[in-house]
Image (tube, rainbow over all chains, first blue to last red; front, top):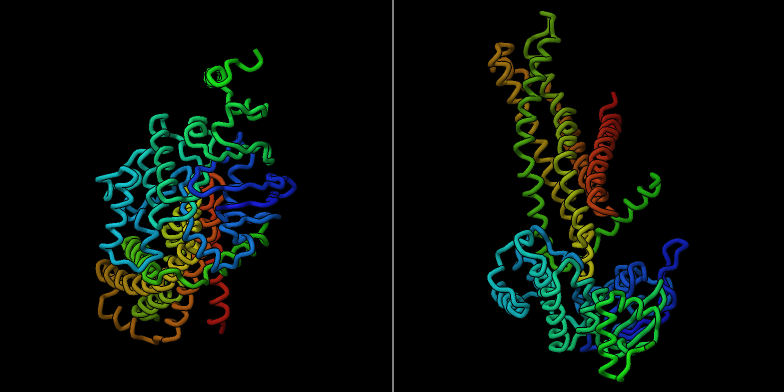
Length: 261
Length: 247
């Protein structure tokens, strides 16, 4: 489990995170949602240690990342996997070399053992016959899956995904969402996903943190969202008429009436 | 960013390189890869420039030595010492600042913008040690080798052109090469080569590693890396010459 307590972060005079406290649960897809500029990317960068908070604690299974020394932080980072928005694959390496990189760096396994593990994870993310291809030769969805394979190859306890669906079509987005969900449950990882894709919110949002202008606005599940009375959250989630209609239908089914009617 | 901030940031970046490698084998692999990239990759341009440097130097020296009192073998002496002390180390380093320096800056800049450096950081890899140190060490090893090769090739180029054009025959040229040779000149040349290698690789790595923004910034930082490297190489050239060769 990851807990954050009273996190504050400023850049110069501008405070981007105000006293945020939250819990990210193991075996669940924990979503951080919010409009652009709400501070969700900064929060994720704080969680993975790319930024340091001005104030507060980031507890990984009870151990505060902020006060860890270099060696402890290095150990912790080996338990973290991350999928980046642009996949962040190494251009000069093949798919196989990309996925093998963490194994090369942090294990003493033989080449055959490493190759076996790489094939296992590539198969797990439904990628076959791509081992020798370079990132430039595969599609956006495949890059994301290679990114996921690289993130899980060391069996991380914590998985972070920054905008996993950006630049993908709805069908491929759903495949990626389901894959992340399956892996989270299968390996009991604490998965934190930064997104503003409403399909993801409804599909895999086990624990949702909604942020507005650097403040924690709302916490709940994808089921709670439908019945949420928070106006800002409703505006954000049901921004399109289509989604508003979908919400009304769900409300009609659940409560026999449409709100405000 | 003001100059003083750049200097401070450069020192911090360089200081951060000195950490225990996570896996020595991987670092060795990266070091060897960089040796090939920098050393072998720059070989053709270094060879071509060196041949022409020697050739031009021979023709130009002959043109300027108009007195019959000066023996023709002096041409070879001038070519040898010019190549050894100044032309090969400085010109080749400036060319390498363009070829290798811009490559280092754009490669690291691209890795920064596309979050590849962040990905390595999150894995627990010390990115300064893994990405910058092998490049500087590889330059430290291969640039003096390239400059040594350049000295030899340029002297050969001068000999070849001297013979071809009839300015100076090979025998006289060889005699000139043996005349009044001072071994200390080789030391000066290698001091320059090592200093310039460190400047061109570390400055380029600094600008590339600390890129902020988008694709446009990669180009800007790459250009800045080359310009700053060239200025610092010329400044270091002057200081080394002043310190080691002042009569």
